[in-house]
Figure 1: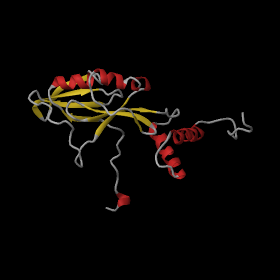
Figure 2: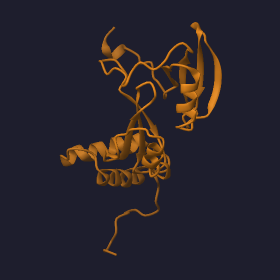
Figure 3: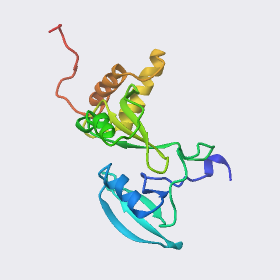
Figure 4: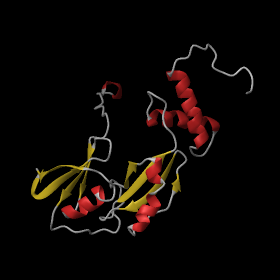
Length: 198
Protein backbone atom coordinates (compact mmCIF):
# COMPACT_ATOMS: atom_id res chain seq x y z
CA UNK A 1 0.00 0.00 0.00
CA UNK A 2 1.40 3.42 -0.91
CA UNK A 3 1.55 6.34 1.53
CA UNK A 4 -1.40 8.13 -0.07
CA UNK A 5 -3.61 5.05 0.39
CA UNK A 6 -2.73 4.45 4.05
CA UNK A 7 -5.56 5.45 6.35
CA UNK A 8 -4.93 6.92 9.79
CA UNK A 9 -6.22 5.79 13.14
CA UNK A 10 -7.36 9.30 14.06
CA UNK A 11 -7.10 9.98 17.78
CA UNK A 12 -9.32 12.53 19.50
CA UNK A 13 -7.54 13.24 22.77
CA UNK A 14 -5.79 11.48 25.61
CA UNK A 15 -8.05 8.78 27.05
CA UNK A 16 -5.91 8.03 30.11
CA UNK A 17 -2.31 7.68 31.26
CA UNK A 18 -1.35 4.72 33.46
CA UNK A 19 1.66 4.75 35.74
CA UNK A 20 3.34 1.98 37.73
CA UNK A 21 2.97 2.97 41.35
CA UNK A 22 4.07 1.62 44.70
CA UNK A 23 1.61 1.21 47.59
CA UNK A 24 -1.86 2.75 47.54
CA UNK A 25 -1.23 5.39 50.20
CA UNK A 26 1.67 6.97 48.25
CA UNK A 27 -0.70 7.40 45.30
CA UNK A 28 -3.45 8.93 47.43
CA UNK A 29 -1.05 11.29 49.20
CA UNK A 30 0.39 12.62 45.95
CA UNK A 31 -2.34 12.59 43.31
CA UNK A 32 -5.24 13.61 45.54
CA UNK A 33 -3.46 14.94 48.65
CA UNK A 34 -1.05 17.28 46.82
CA UNK A 35 -2.46 17.77 43.32
CA UNK A 36 -6.13 17.69 44.32
CA UNK A 37 -7.20 15.08 41.75
CA UNK A 38 -10.40 13.41 42.95
CA UNK A 39 -10.18 9.62 43.42
CA UNK A 40 -12.94 8.36 41.12
CA UNK A 41 -12.56 4.62 40.54
CA UNK A 42 -10.90 1.59 42.14
CA UNK A 43 -10.63 -2.00 40.97
CA UNK A 44 -8.03 -4.75 40.62
CA UNK A 45 -5.56 -4.60 37.76
CA UNK A 46 -7.39 -6.94 35.38
CA UNK A 47 -4.06 -8.19 33.96
CA UNK A 48 -2.40 -8.83 37.37
CA UNK A 49 -4.51 -9.90 40.37
CA UNK A 50 -1.71 -8.90 42.78
CA UNK A 51 -2.12 -5.24 41.83
CA UNK A 52 -4.74 -2.59 42.41
CA UNK A 53 -5.77 -0.01 39.84
CA UNK A 54 -6.58 3.49 41.10
CA UNK A 55 -8.17 6.17 38.91
CA UNK A 56 -7.85 9.93 39.48
CA UNK A 57 -9.45 12.82 37.55
CA UNK A 58 -6.82 15.45 36.64
CA UNK A 59 -9.51 18.10 36.20
CA UNK A 60 -10.71 17.60 32.64
CA UNK A 61 -12.67 14.38 33.10
CA UNK A 62 -9.90 12.26 31.62
CA UNK A 63 -7.95 9.90 33.83
CA UNK A 64 -4.59 9.32 35.45
CA UNK A 65 -4.47 5.71 36.63
CA UNK A 66 -1.97 3.99 38.90
CA UNK A 67 -1.14 0.30 39.23
CA UNK A 68 -0.43 -0.27 42.92
CA UNK A 69 1.16 -3.10 44.86
CA UNK A 70 1.59 -3.04 48.63
CA UNK A 71 4.93 -4.86 48.29
CA UNK A 72 6.45 -2.16 46.04
CA UNK A 73 8.28 0.88 47.35
CA UNK A 74 9.92 3.81 45.54
CA UNK A 75 13.16 2.84 43.76
CA UNK A 76 14.09 5.95 41.75
CA UNK A 77 15.24 9.41 42.72
CA UNK A 78 14.41 10.25 39.08
CA UNK A 79 12.69 7.87 36.67
CA UNK A 80 14.81 6.79 33.67
CA UNK A 81 15.14 9.16 30.73
CA UNK A 82 16.25 6.59 28.18
CA UNK A 83 14.74 6.81 24.68
CA UNK A 84 11.13 5.71 24.85
CA UNK A 85 10.70 6.63 28.52
CA UNK A 86 8.34 9.35 29.73
CA UNK A 87 10.28 12.54 30.44
CA UNK A 88 7.53 14.29 32.43
CA UNK A 89 3.80 14.82 32.80
CA UNK A 90 2.44 18.37 32.66
CA UNK A 91 -0.79 19.53 34.26
CA UNK A 92 -2.65 22.77 33.67
CA UNK A 93 -3.29 25.05 36.65
CA UNK A 94 -5.01 28.42 36.91
CA UNK A 95 -3.02 31.62 37.39
CA UNK A 96 -4.44 31.85 40.92
CA UNK A 97 -3.05 28.42 41.78
CA UNK A 98 0.23 29.01 39.96
CA UNK A 99 0.85 32.14 42.02
CA UNK A 100 0.73 29.94 45.16
CA UNK A 101 2.72 26.97 43.91
CA UNK A 102 6.16 27.85 45.31
CA UNK A 103 4.77 28.65 48.77
CA UNK A 104 2.71 25.45 48.86
CA UNK A 105 5.55 23.21 47.64
CA UNK A 106 7.97 24.87 50.07
CA UNK A 107 5.65 24.37 53.05
CA UNK A 108 5.66 20.63 52.29
CA UNK A 109 9.45 20.55 51.80
CA UNK A 110 9.16 19.54 48.12
CA UNK A 111 12.20 20.54 46.07
CA UNK A 112 11.35 22.27 42.77
CA UNK A 113 12.87 24.06 39.80
CA UNK A 114 11.55 27.51 40.60
CA UNK A 115 9.49 29.38 38.04
CA UNK A 116 10.36 28.84 34.36
CA UNK A 117 9.43 31.27 31.58
CA UNK A 118 8.38 29.28 28.51
CA UNK A 119 7.17 32.27 26.47
CA UNK A 120 3.59 31.05 26.06
CA UNK A 121 3.27 29.63 29.57
CA UNK A 122 4.91 29.61 32.98
CA UNK A 123 6.07 26.32 34.47
CA UNK A 124 7.50 24.75 37.59
CA UNK A 125 8.92 21.22 37.92
CA UNK A 126 9.25 18.75 40.79
CA UNK A 127 9.24 14.97 41.17
CA UNK A 128 6.54 12.73 42.54
CA UNK A 129 7.43 10.29 45.35
CA UNK A 130 8.51 7.67 42.77
CA UNK A 131 10.82 10.00 40.84
CA UNK A 132 8.54 10.96 37.94
CA UNK A 133 9.06 14.56 36.86
CA UNK A 134 5.85 16.59 37.14
CA UNK A 135 5.28 20.00 35.55
CA UNK A 136 2.59 22.45 36.59
CA UNK A 137 1.93 24.82 33.70
CA UNK A 138 -0.12 28.00 33.43
CA UNK A 139 -0.95 29.42 30.00
CA UNK A 140 -0.37 33.15 29.50
CA UNK A 141 -3.38 33.45 27.21
CA UNK A 142 -6.98 32.43 26.76
CA UNK A 143 -7.98 31.31 23.26
CA UNK A 144 -10.77 33.22 21.51
CA UNK A 145 -14.28 31.79 21.73
CA UNK A 146 -14.55 28.72 19.54
CA UNK A 147 -10.78 28.19 19.33
CA UNK A 148 -8.46 25.93 21.31
CA UNK A 149 -5.06 26.56 22.85
CA UNK A 150 -3.64 24.49 19.97
CA UNK A 151 -5.27 26.85 17.43
CA UNK A 152 -3.51 29.81 19.01
CA UNK A 153 -0.21 27.92 19.25
CA UNK A 154 -0.11 26.96 15.57
CA UNK A 155 -0.95 30.50 14.47
CA UNK A 156 1.64 31.96 16.88
CA UNK A 157 4.21 29.48 15.53
CA UNK A 158 3.58 30.64 11.97
CA UNK A 159 3.97 34.29 13.02
CA UNK A 160 7.18 33.55 14.97
CA UNK A 161 8.76 31.66 12.06
CA UNK A 162 7.77 34.35 9.53
CA UNK A 163 9.44 36.99 11.71
CA UNK A 164 12.56 34.87 12.27
CA UNK A 165 12.20 34.95 16.05
CA UNK A 166 13.97 32.28 18.10
CA UNK A 167 11.14 31.21 20.38
CA UNK A 168 7.52 32.00 21.02
CA UNK A 169 6.76 35.16 22.97
CA UNK A 170 3.62 36.92 24.16
CA UNK A 171 3.60 39.26 21.12
CA UNK A 172 3.20 36.22 18.85
CA UNK A 173 0.29 34.99 20.98
CA UNK A 174 -1.43 38.39 20.96
CA UNK A 175 -1.08 38.71 17.19
CA UNK A 176 -2.30 35.11 16.72
CA UNK A 177 -5.38 35.77 18.85
CA UNK A 178 -6.16 38.91 16.81
CA UNK A 179 -5.87 36.91 13.56
CA UNK A 180 -8.08 34.10 14.87
CA UNK A 181 -10.76 36.53 16.03
CA UNK A 182 -10.68 38.17 12.59
CA UNK A 183 -11.13 34.78 10.91
CA UNK A 184 -13.67 33.17 13.21
CA UNK A 185 -15.89 35.98 14.51
CA UNK A 186 -18.12 37.99 12.21
CA UNK A 187 -18.38 41.78 12.18
CA UNK A 188 -20.77 44.11 10.37
CA UNK A 189 -17.78 46.33 9.51
CA UNK A 190 -16.31 45.76 6.07
CA UNK A 191 -12.91 46.98 7.28
CA UNK A 192 -12.08 46.32 10.92
CA UNK A 193 -8.97 48.51 10.94
CA UNK A 194 -8.94 51.92 12.65
CA UNK A 195 -9.29 55.02 10.48
CA UNK A 196 -7.35 57.21 12.89
CA UNK A 197 -5.18 56.73 15.96
CA UNK A 198 -7.17 56.97 19.17
